[in-house]
Each structure stands twice: as C-alpha cells, then as structure tokens.
Amino acid sequence: MTDEPQLRLGVNIDHVATVRNARGGDYPDPLRAAKIAEKAGADGITAHLREDRRHISDADIAGLMEVLTVPLNFEMAATDEMQQIALRHKPHAVCIVPEKREERTTEGGLEVAREENRLAHFIAPLRNAGCRVSIFIAADQRQIEAAHRIGAQVIELHTGAYCDAHAEGRYEDRDRELEALREMSAFGHSLGMEVHAGHGLNYETVQPVAAFPEVRELNIGHFIIGESIFRGLEPAILEMRRLMDEARA
Image 1 (cartoon, rainbow, N blue to C red):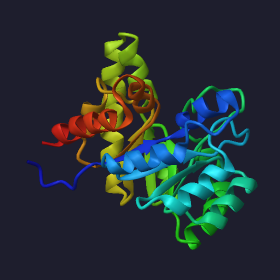
Image 2 (tube, rainbow, N blue to C red):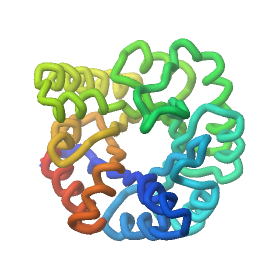
Image 3 (tube, rainbow, N blue to C red):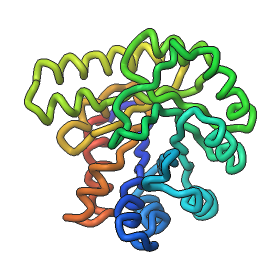
C-alpha cells in the first residue's frame, strides 16, 4: 500500500436537483442525497450554484451548510453576486469555475492568465473569510502559474477532454490528455498548491487519474448520480471509492 494520503472523494449533487426541478417540486431532495453520500464515505459534497439556478438553489446551499458534517465545496462563477453568497455562508472551499448560460455543463477550465488582476482581487475576500479557494482550470502550465500568482490554494484540473476522448474511442488523444494531466498535477504540486481533478470521470476513466500521487481529491457527480438510478446512491459511491483506493494501492 502506498504511503500517500488517501485520495478524497467529493460527490457533486447538482443533478439530484436537476431531477427535482424537472417537476418543480421538492423531490428528490439534494440534502438527503448529501447525507447518503456522507454515510457512504464521501469526504466532501460539491454543489454548483449557477447564475440561472438551473439545478442547485440558494435554499439548497443554506441547507447544506446546516446539515453537512463533511466540507462543502461551493462551485461558483466569479461574479459579485456569487462572491456575496459565499461570504455570507463561508463554506470550507470555494471553487471558481467558468460559466456560460448556454452551456449544458462546464465546458472547460477558467481563463486565469487573461484575467489575473481581476481574479486576484476577487478571491482575496474569500481567502480572508477563511475559505479555501480553488480554481477549475485546464491542464495548462500557463493557467496553473497564473492561479498560483493570484493566491489560489488549490487547483482542480478539468478531466473532461480526457474522458470525452476515451468515450469516443480516440485513444491517442485520450493518452495525450492523460499525460498532460499527469504532468500538470506534478507541476501544480511543485508550486505548493493542492491538486484536485474532476469532470466526466466514471468507473472506466477514474483509475488512471486516481493513480497520480499528487492528486488529493476527485470531484465526481454526473456519473455517480446517473449510476445511482441502477444500483442505488450508496452502492454507486462505494464502487467509485473502491476503484479510487485500488488505483492508489
């Protein structure tokens, strides 16, 4: 068994809220999903409060802050509205993500290098409030260096291109994306930042990323919530946890 710290699993519950909102009621309850995830061994809960409130709501964030015994990772765009919400709740972690209204899901990493000054000023109050600030970025050295300069404690590497290439059978592209993730995990770690990864990971793609010793946390949502339809939420999380632990063995 490796001497590396155990890889943490953050479970994203956004799409429990997506199903709830499809009928306009209060079922299924994302807070109930979060508590089940805790019981199954999730090390944290991730929730993305979007500008258009397409899934997670303001009330969900308030409820999660009340009921969780594991850390909340609050994903948000770099807007004044979201900054004020984060400062009101002071979650354990704030992950700054790019956001476009027309996208179905987050399509890529945040452009930090071009907005370095604005983002440095944006995250300073969050850090001062005690939140760990994470930046969701592509596996790109220029972006990682910029995230380091603005004072982010954590980077979360976008694994979507790697997962998409695997799903589409573009194995050379997949391997190239995986190598970039490996190299940039090591690079981010060398700068003293904690390295996380996520987006699109499933049972087939999680282990190569989980094996990177510099990665401390994976955030996985859509696949786990989808798989829970077939096997239940707790078993779906337990299987992801097993695969992650096996990759670190």
